[in-house]
Image (cartoon, rainbow, N blue to C red; front, side, top):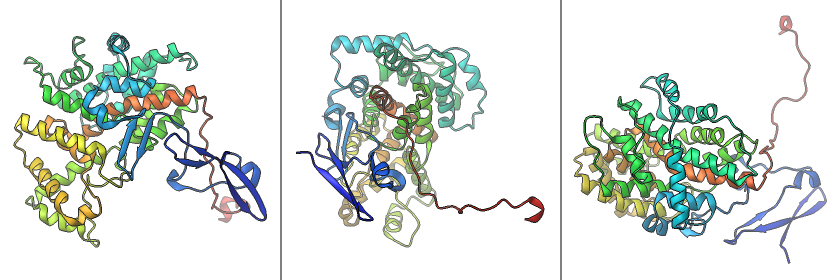
Length: 427
């Protein structure tokens, strides 16, 4: 028998169905609450509100579990590559050999970005924040691909998805190269998806491109780990913009803007800025660990703990190993990274942090890797967006195929009651 929850108010009681997810999560379906009882719920930040039912990502913060389409993140990071995971997130199953080859071939066929896009890029000064540039370029793709996408047609939607997966890495690399004063690059169709991204970003005009398997593998893992993370701020933004029947490119552009915020995608930038501040203060990690434990000190240790995970971030376990391998492979001698390793060691051994489960999170280690690869700090969130792209696409596709209604939250009005207009000369 289906479970129900009762709500009583002013002598009136109504029963609402309880929805149970496949991982036994329970939710009260209150879509008739206002019509039946004249009430709405108030939940700032939507911390206890489910906006949708989704089959894409399962996250259990208490147990430290993250699964894409049922597959543990640990297995995917170890055994799959980013393009396989992108296919899984978007279409629901891991691809077979033929499906993956076709997917990659279709992406490569769409990788050209119209030359006129360069004029838009040229309009930005070098000082422009890369996330602003990326959001604008992604939105501008609409002008160069103006035909409407029939989201009820799997073929139409597939072509839009492939087009975005093809062009987005080009825009990311152009954003970086603009900042670094390098000529723009279109990459190499003979390379794998992630290796081609690396080449487009880092190839120098006066030397041959040399690949590094350790670096490519670490970058591949980073992108996988950022692939999706349930209904976070940027993902919810993509879904709610798409719910108005805005197109895929416009919805993703909105998601990029949401990710730009320092409380969301800017966390790995905050880690590096904190490390730089510690270096400027003689690099005394013990001093800053003490400040972090002092409730009266405004200093906060960035990159430790997580809003969702109340245990060790499962992504951090994976990327810690990759960070160690990259630093060893590149032999980077960087005092900032030495400070990071010192903080990590002390936090993992300090009872204060261990008891509170304030472990290093994925933002801490991703910042270390990006720094070691020579990626500028304000490009870190762009790399986050690159990894999150398949998840955003998957969420958009699911929302549109489910024909979800337009997002339209309610509010509790707390302003002035009705009052009469006062003419200007009497105010």
